[in-house]
Image (cartoon, rainbow, N blue to C red; front, side, top):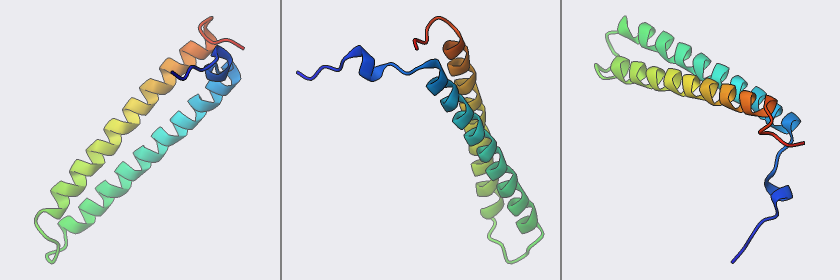
Length: 90
């Protein structure tokens, strides 16, 4: 059986706050991808050569990116609250 010492798995509040920043940046990036996908879908809607499935597929992927961004922001907020509470050890 392998065990880890508590010190090996405990992150400092500063380390957790750094991760909060990373999660928020990732959320912003996912929102950017969603905007790009929607812009591409709008461009293709005016293109007669574009396959019929392309616009709905791009819109579906944009919605998935937006949902992921929301989940990342929720995770960032929860981690931020934890890092600033007594739950995070230095």
